[in-house]
Every structure is written in structure tokens, then in C-alpha cells.
Picture 1 (cartoon, rainbow, N blue to C red):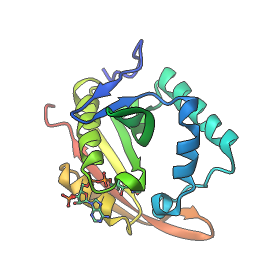
Picture 2: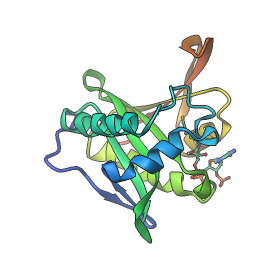
Picture 3: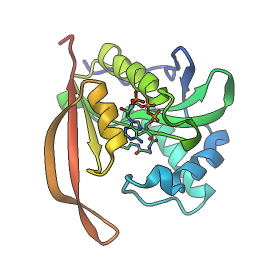
Picture 4: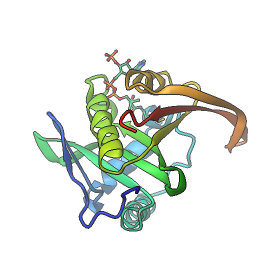
Length: 185
Ligand SMILES: CC(C)(COP(=O)(O)OP(=O)(O)OC[C@H]1O[C@@H](n2cnc3c(N)ncnc32)[C@H](O)[C@@H]1OP(=O)(O)O)[C@@H](O)C(=O)NCCC(=O)NCCS
């Protein structure tokens, strides 16, 4: 059975990080990140127009947790737990096939310190051991070398390249799909 109906949001902890649920107090940093072209360069999604849009997204994530559609964590450093620095989470839960898509982003001030490596490992372990996912999928823009390397580092294997299957801002873009199979199944 795939488990996403937790009674309480699962807060996770790693050596340096706490992964917790989204809160309106994260809205400004989330807005700054989702309008920062360094962060969004390979994320082919509309940039939020304003803080209200971000608050709507936060509400959607929290509702998504309640109805089992997604499980999205805010990443904070233990040494500064009020300040979000990134996100990691599962989206598009596919119950029939025990599959979900993983996504992540980090504020550029914290890049290249192994933070997403640490957060992703925890999220993947949780996905396989507690949620009982059978496979985890990731979808990257073909130019996103950083994301590709992280996925490979965590054992993901390239499964597909969909040619021009995604329309964004006047262009048809390719999608590179990676997958990881639950090693305990
Ligand atoms: C991708 C991203 C999350 C990486 O986070 P990070 O915490 O800096 O990554 P880590 O420090 O854990 O790096 C792990 C490995 O990924 C690879 N990597 C990370 N950044 C890289 C870069 N800019 N170029 C090439 N490889 C990179 C390296 O192999 C690295 O290992 P190493 O430092 O031992 O060489 C971050 O760059 C980011 O937020 N990018 C913008 C958002 C985004 O594209 N998200 C993914 C959408 S699919």
C-alpha cells in the first residue's frame, strides 16, 4: 500500500538540515527564489507574479499534503531554522503504480555544499521506506547539468528522452526522464 495519508506532516532531520512543511513565513524567500533566474534557468514554469501567487502555491502544497497528492518539504539549516534555503519533495503521486516525481531547488548562496545531496538522500529513503514508493521519477531540462549529476550520484538512471513534448514560452522543449527503483522491492 502506498502511504501518503499521514496524520501529521513528517518532519525529517539530517546531519545539518531539517525538512519541514511549507508556511506563509516562507513566502518571501520562496518568491525570491522562484523569480531568481539563476534558480529558474532550467525550470520551465511560469514565474510567480507576486507574493499572493506564492501564498496560493503554499496553500496548494499544504492541501496537496492533506489529500495525498504531494509531499513537499522546506529545507532549513539547523543552525538557522527560521530561514528557508530550499525545497525538496514528491509531486504527482501515481498511486496505481506506486510512483512519484521528485523535485528540488536551493538558494544560490548555498549551492555546492552538498545540501541537496543530503536532503535528497533523506527524501528518497523516506519515499521508499515509509511511503512505499516502487519508483521515483525525475524530469529535467536537458541543459540542467547540475541536476543531471545529482540524480546520477543518487543512482538514478536515464530512462527516456521525450523530444519536444513540452511547450513553454513559445518553444517546444525536450524532457529528460530519470528513474530510481526501490532497492528493497
Ligand atoms: C541543482 C541544485 C539543486 C544542486 O544543489 P546543490 O546543493 O548545490 O548540490 P550538491 O552540492 O549536493 O551537489 C551534488 C553534486 O551535483 C553536481 N553539481 C551540483 N552543482 C553543479 C553544477 N553547477 N554543475 C555541475 N554539477 C553540479 C556535482 O556532481 C555535485 O557533486 P560535487 O560537489 O561533489 O562535485 C542547485 O544547483 C539548484 O537549486 N539549481 C536550480 C534549481 C534546479 O535546477 N533544480 C532542479 C530542477 S530538475
